[in-house]
Image 1: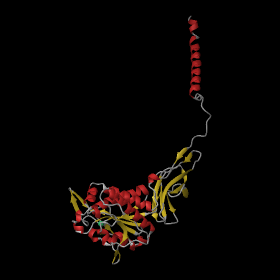
Image 2 (image 1 turned 180 degrees about the horizontal axis):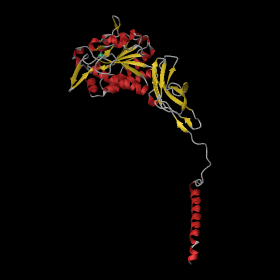
Image 3 (image 1 turned 45 degrees about the vertical axis):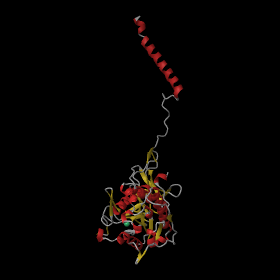
Image 4 (image 1 turned 90 degrees about the vertical axis):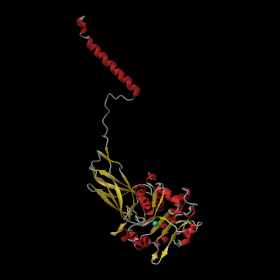
Length: 386
Ligand SMILES: [Zn+2]
């Protein structure tokens, strides 16, 4: 018997191998191709390479500066641009390895909105393939935003322990507006102030004057001064700070050159209509009407526009002894920048101040302002692109 045990283990081993092969074959038949044998080698999969860190910003009204992070696998780069009002991507230039910026000449100063991308051309195309990477949203516009006044230069009123100051409220609107224009539309802003004081051309607060704010917009495409309005004391027999809701209306005042500018008048109309509707919806205005105007036919402001409870908000122009009545508009006009003052609502109405003091109104106005400004320029929010 011992002799026979000697060949039993090899027999069992052979049987086990045969069973295992059978099981593999059955399993293979049930689940897919037999993977026990390696497939014939294909061409190795290429490693995707893309460019990250892409940014684009306005250099001049007709030039954009595109920057990116160096990609070691690239022997060159293709700078790709998509106009958001047109279909498809176009290669607008090439850059060599080691270069990380490119100036895109637009050939025009017409306001345009773009998405940029940089595609790497791999040095070793047998190992690497180029795939689309980061994109950057940008426009060739820069807007000068002027949150009106400075701390101490506009009146204050305290209701229920909360103080409304026009200077602080419009600063809140302005900072939010700057961020929305940049992040949502790719529009850059130059701010006349970003805190409670004004400092332009080295002149601070009362040492400054409002005309300087307008002059500060030189080189920008548009100047926009942000305000809330106040009616004269004693109008219709009411104390200044407690005037009736029916006086509330938005007003948009254009500088002289903006009155003939189709884009500016369209923008002013959109702003006025949207603000009037929102003020009414919020219960801080008695009606939602706003009188829109045509370029070349913008009416002159009159005191009756403020006082008459039946007059709608409107786009207008106000004449002074030296051209534009308001210094900020005179300043911007003198440096060739079309400008406007947005009077969002009357802060002499209690309901308006309460919404502002509760933090509700500034985000709403900033969103309305941004959308009207950008839509008038023909721009699209990032969320609606791709
Ligand atoms: Zn003001």
